Image (tube, rainbow, N blue to C red):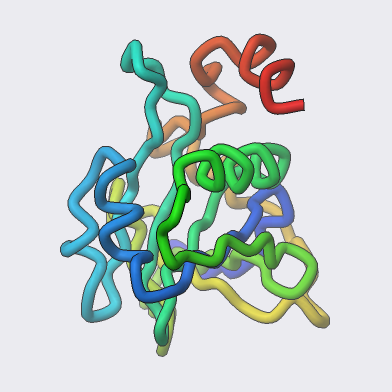
Amino acid sequence: MQNQHSTALHNRGVLRVSGPDADAFLQGLITNDLDKAVDGHAIYAALLSPQGKILFSFFIARREDAFWIDCPAELAAALAKRLALYKLRSAVAIEDVWETYCVTVTWGNAANGGAESFADPRLPALGYRRISPRAGLEDSGGYDPHRITLAVPEGGRDYIYGNRARLQARLA
C-alpha cells in the first residue's frame, strides 16, 4: 500500500495570463479546448509551430480571473515571449510569476489536492497539482520516479520540443 507523497516541483515554471481577451486569445493558440478548464479541472495542451511540431507543452488551470500555466521552468520565459508575439492588440497580460509561485504535486493513498488543485489530466495516478505561493516549499523529490513508473513522459526531459536550438536562437 502506497503512502501519500507531496513535493514542490522546482523544475516547473508558472505563467499567469489575464485580461478580458485571455480566454479567446489562448483558445486560438493551444491544442486543447480551454472550455474544459473549469470547476477545478485543468487541461494539458501544447503550442505548436506552423509545421505542427510541439514547441511547448503545459497545463492550464483557470483560477480567479486568470489562466495559470504550469510549464517547464527553463522554457517559461520563451513561452511568455512566444505568447506575447501573438498578443497584437488583445487585452491580455502575460506574466512570469515563477519567483512568487511554484507547482506542487501530491500523489499516493488518499491523495487529495484540496482547494485550488487539479487532478493531472494525463493520468489520475499522477496525483493532484497545485500552483502555490513559493515561500517555504521544499522539493522532497520522488515525483520523477513515480511519473516514469507510470510511463508518462515530460516534454523537454523525455522528448525534445520541435527544433529547440532554432527556436531559442530566434527568440533571443
